[in-house]
Image 1 (spheres, rainbow, N blue to C red):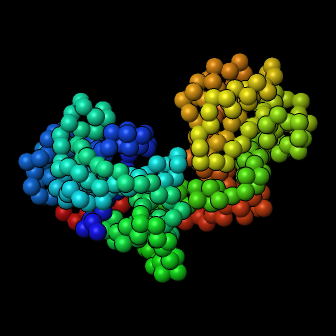
Image 2 (cartoon, rainbow, N blue to C red):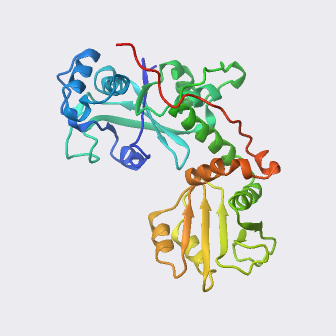
Image 3 (cartoon, one colour):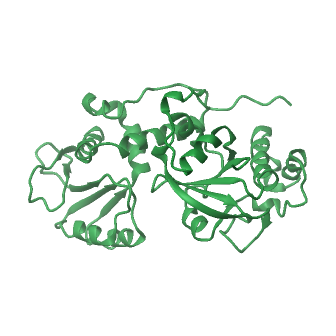
Length: 336
C-alpha cells in the first residue's frame, strides 16, 4: 500500500483536468519561484517565497500556506505515492500513482504551471463512493494537501470496497473558504441525487425568487421546454423566457443545444440549465443562435440558489435545506 496520498487540484477552476489525465501528470503554479529542485526544507521554501518579488508582500499566513503547498508537491511527494485530482464536471476523482521526481518544465506543460510530477492514472472514483468525513476532507480549497488520514478509505475504494458510513468520525468544521467550498460540494451532492422533475421545479422556484413569474410546463408537446418565465403575471411583457433543464453528469452537446435554440421564436429568450456543463460546440451553438441564450452550469446555479435562497418558497427550501452560519471573514493573524 502507498505510504502517503496527496490531492493536487487541476488549476484554479478545474480547467486542467483533461490535460492532467491525457498527459499523465499533475502540475502546480507559482512559476515566479523558478526551479525549486535545490530547495531542501520547508524553511528554505518559505525563504524562497520571501525573496521572490511577486510573493514577498504577501502576509505571513498566506506565504506560509503557499510555501507549504509547494513544499508538499516538490519535497514530500515521492514516486509510489498516491495522488488524486478532482473532475468537478463528472464529480469524479482521478486516482493515480506518482511515477517521477519533481520536474521543472516552464513553457512545456499547462501555461503558468511549470512544477510537474508524472502520474500513472489507475482509475476514476465517484465522489459518492466516499464517506461524508472523507468528502469533507477532499473539499479543501488548497491546491496541494495531504490525504494521509484518508489513505485506508481511498485505497479500499480503489480496490472495490465500500466504506462503512457508520464508522465515519465527525469532523471539525473548517474555516472560511474551505467552509464555502465544502458547502458548494454538499449542495452539489444533493442536486446530483435529486429527481430530475423536482430539479425542474426547483429551477422554476429560483426564477420566481429572482422576481420572474415562472412555472414548469405540463404540455407533452412543449418540444423540450421545461420551464417558461416572464416579467409580469399575465405574460404580456418581454422577454418571454423558455428554459430547458437537465440534471445529469454528462455535458450537453451541440445537437441538444441546436434543438433547443430552434424552439425560440422572435423576441424570445433561452435559458439552459445543465448540472453537467456544456461542450465547446454546444457553447458555440448557443452563442451563434438567432435569439439570445444564457447557459447556466451547476456551479452558477448553486450561486443563484444561495443568493436567492431567502426568497425561495419553503417547499423548495426543503428540497435543499440550508442553514445560515456566521464566521469571521478573515483568518486570525499568525504569531510572529
